[in-house]
Image (cartoon, rainbow, N blue to C red; front, side):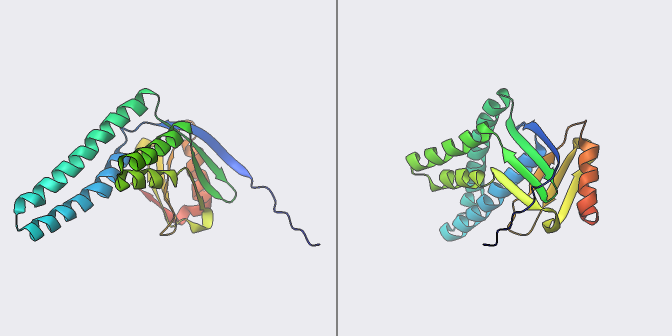
Length: 192
């Protein structure tokens, strides 16, 4: 019998941080892009079909306004309890992001609320967030790295279907993280 064992993955650096929602510009811009653009397109479509331009304005305002109200309320609660706990791991094979218990509980609660309320959009948002609980991008699959030195933040993107990983560095490890990423993906880094 031929058995092969792989060598354990060497971990270069690991750290834990808490991400606050309400003062995070990356989360706000992603939220507005993910829900704002479809709301505007839906409003335009309804305005054309109904031959009433008011729908083109009202649908995005109501949809995005409602979503922002919910996001702010949830964000206040999460931020009051310290934010989302995230663990980052830089290893020989790549970059990994693991969510903490609060994030897992929030996504589960969102999916259950969507099911009980009969709202497929809420359920889908929870399912999407659930898929981001454990994200991994191998070093050789990295397509771009956006570095924001002022925020000690690196956004690592992989292939088209890979979830991006936002590395929120501490003042103590920012330089070390940047050096590790440069070691494996120097040609992909863009300063923002």
